Image (cartoon, rainbow, N blue to C red):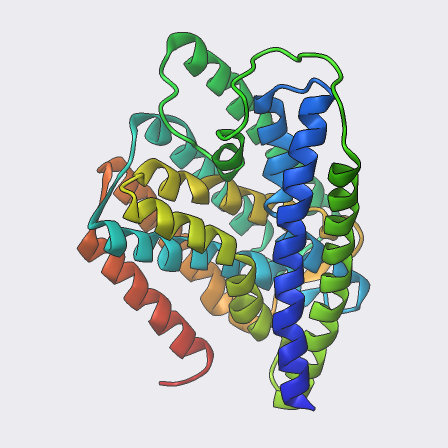
Length: 331
């Protein structure tokens, strides 16, 4: 029975990731048909859509009575994004170069967002008031990012894709003004509904299987969330970053991480926290939070130097392996 639930867990993750892809692709086309600019689509529809697996699984966890997976999933995803994805990307590329705009905007915003989240998590729980603060901080992040990008575009300084939302919006037509309502195909609507359905069904069985596996193995649900769920929901970012690194497109490999990490700790935690106080399990608090803080600081320091060398990538990977080993008490 345990093997069956592990299979259900893997299939559910696949459905959630695939459902998010279908939802994003169709929502982009529908947004353009309604005359939304590519930038607006990128910062809203795509920016949220690419984080839907994390967000939906967090909301499902609250509704299913396992709120401790919310913070664990967000913290584990951020750790995996930096140590695993950036580490593998740096090793694959040999060296990742950080552009000027990332230092001026995204690195400080990521660092400040992390500080805000750590402050909220200090007492081992996220309550309603703290959730509102997290969501408000994300609103400020969106406003500031949008304002800064508009300034950069006018000055001709916009060189990179600073967030995961821009990764996909860069493939859209370069329109700066809404072009009016266009045609919306039945196929786009069907894939939108199919994506939403896949996310809903995947989230339900993901949480059911997580509870069953944790019960069968006599381990905390938070431990599975900070490892398996976090890794599974980060797979799209991993594949995109590795491919970009091989193609020597460091700005995409790096820009793939910023918006993801900010969204995880501000919205993936903040939104479920509106419905229920979110406890933080002991392992996430004692090991996950400190490592997330340290890995974010290492990422910021590497960003200030504007290069992430292969040896730094290898160090990130070794740190991630040690993190997993410590979580499962291998030493």
